[in-house]
Image (cartoon, rainbow, N blue to C red; front, side, top):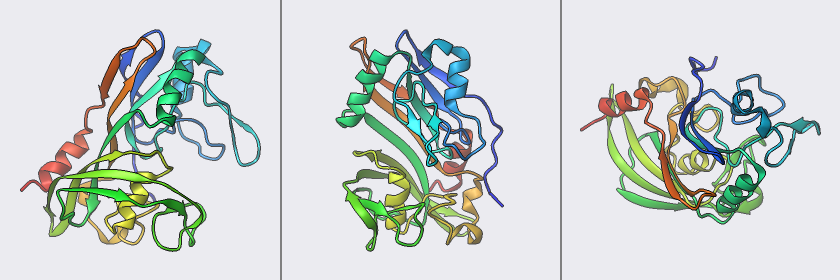
Length: 253
């Protein structure tokens, strides 16, 4: 049974102009349909308010070859991850933003809680990511990863470390320099410090842990720094979920 529970709150608008919409995506929402999961999607919500944006961006395909509606999508967050997400309202804006992600010109900052103690205050995780040799659904940054290994770099800063009910946890700031699928989750798993509540990469510890009192994946996209088509350099912040603030207090030294 999943430990996840979500109140299905709708996305909150952080910023909007004629070219973009920036939102705080709730945990539990897909960025776009995936052809297999029945869950609310940001794209459906986006098009209800802006139907003229239908078709903006690049089409996607499910594994069975059927079309996936990705209108407005420039980048994505995992269903279980909350936080800041930018959507393009027109094709010109989409191309402008997409190029920045491709060229690694976007600043992305996440907050996460992990199982165990992170001893270094600062660190850089430089581990290429491939496919897991044990489960084809998963990625891996550990020895034995299969397929093409792609460069993946994450900067890490330990915010605090402490214990809750006798179990150690660390609270981290994570800045990915690359944009691989599940990158942060995979990199932390490779350090044997998986993200709290991760039902893909922390299956060996979930049922034995108090999970810091959280009932979700403890990963939040906190800040996005990007240039807009207007020429303005912007930094958008999605406030930390209340559950994160409470979890931080539980392990505060």
